[in-house]
Image 1: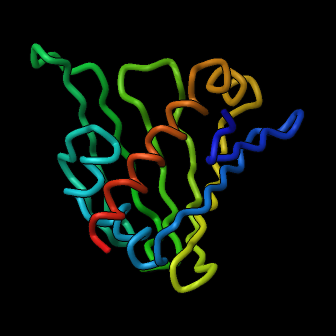
Image 2: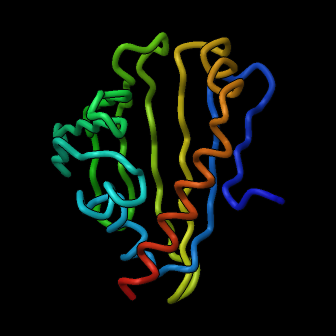
Image 3: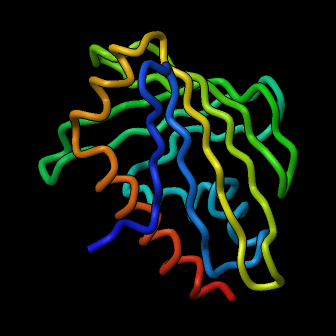
Length: 155
């Protein structure tokens, strides 16, 4: 089955360009990245902090069924333009991966469809390639599928 979330990993580059078209109006797609309650649902993680503004920050945490923390991530939001773009850092805590820079751009295609383009810049080509060895593409596609399903209910 073809993944709806497309990942372009150019040879020898420190970046990934990720695109996904959604059957959602632009405002609802953006809301899925802006509203902590919606983020928690589609990402499957707890939002401890989400300050949607320039120089704001965020912090996510995921626990297993026994309450043990299995994933923590945080970052700084450098640019926040509603319904247009978010520029932020992303850092997985207690992981071998260095911080990465993410540029998220939101685009209206029609009244009922929109597109997300994410450019993720890694410290090195080796770091990027290490991420690609994980089930990253499948996980991101599954999360985006959940985003589509959850936000569809808000229409």
